[in-house]
Amino acid sequence: MKTAVLFDYDGVIADTMREHARAWQNIFAKIGIAIEPMEIYLQEGRRTQEVVGYILQKYGREADAETCKKIAKMKENMFISSRNTSLYEGALKLVEQLHRAGVPLGLVTGSPRRSVLAVVPEEVIGRFRVVVTAEDVTAGKPSPEPYLAAARKLRISPECCLAVENAPLGIQSAKAAGMTVLAITTTLPDEALSQADEVVHSFEELHAALSRSMNLHEEFAQGACMNTNKG
Image (cartoon, rainbow, N blue to C red; front, side, top):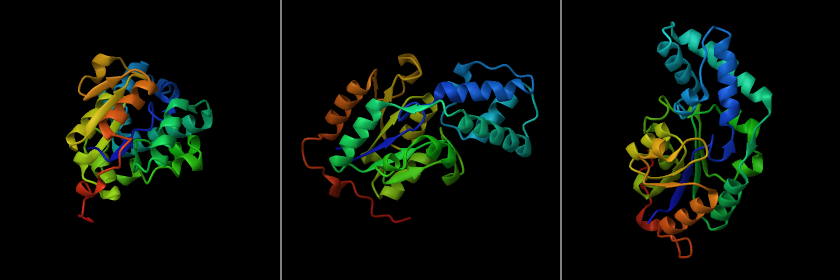
């Protein structure tokens, strides 16, 4: 039985992907690179500097660490200043219900912590026992490191965690960590999410899938899933 739920942030908890894509388009346009939103959607989950490096290399540009860091900072500043984002009401209701049921929750994102805190109210962040952001790992998604870090902080075995994602790299990350993955089609179609264990098309469907996976109406069998490794 699954005993913990780990949520991606962008495109799962927060309706931010269009604004992220707009910021990326504006920043890269300044150096003569025209990108499509889909290029960003498919790279979601990587840390900001990793996305910069990927795009620069794709378009034959120099991608040294200093350049990537500079462009990444410009992009995050633009995104935060836009303030044109919101949280998914369905996701908030689901998080609240899981929290009331005593389910350990985690937030796992490739976004910088300040970008998350600029959108998510403190009372919502407080529902998550662990929050893993770009600063907490050495490699973003699709590396399993972000999800493994969250499971370790919860002291729950990865196999007992269920991840909720909306992008291929996030799915790959959670699967590589040994987790079951539910994917929701907030930004990408079914075929882009085919590596997930189940694809849902609304937060109502996500609620039903989580209820089935976690047997929410019965006591959680956490004892068998607790990770005694404190490392």
